[in-house]
Figure (cartoon, rainbow, N blue to C red):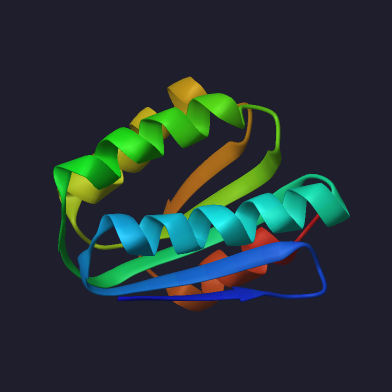
Length: 116
């Protein structure tokens, strides 16, 4: 399950709860594409603290999406304490021009993602 919020500061906030499946990814994808289309470059905050896993098709879609939107994001903040997810977030930097930061604290991630 995923919750996605677009706020007025061109920030898309997503929180994954449980297993991250393809339908969830498409919801995140639609929200970020909407923000980019109507507000320009977006910032993204993804909270993965309550994610218990993801399907392989999500990983593939994420790679395709990130490659298609290499210049559409200014910042991507990932909140997690999982070492594998931290490593995965750092790998995302290969496919995007956005600044990517990993945080263990949600409030710090939010403050960073909202800052210019």
